[in-house]
Image (tube, rainbow, N blue to C red; front, side, top):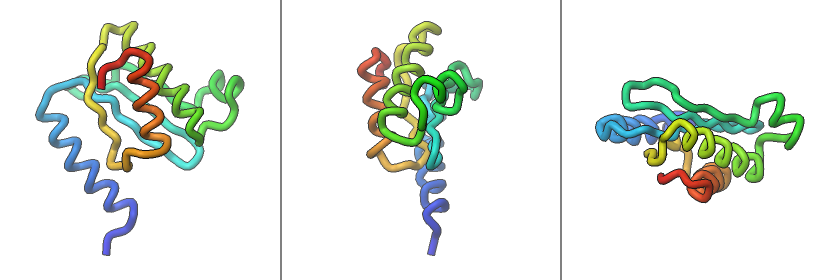
Length: 117
């Protein structure tokens, strides 16, 4: 029987191979119990934009980074940075995490901030 982490990594492998074959920019998400991270990666695997709930400014202004409100803020930040770089459309790479909770709120806040997913 596979562990929870192994099943997540299997889901991530399937979705990433599909996304890499499309040659789109991808919004890659990672989360831990205390923080959430987002990166926009180019088709040639270069990180162009990143945002997380781990930065000193984020922690000073907003505090804890492991809840839905923190993921809303990270989604808004990543969308603003991407639009400044001229990136308007990305594919959503959720790294095998299920699409609910913090992952869903990050994606929706990025969409509401003008990023097309």
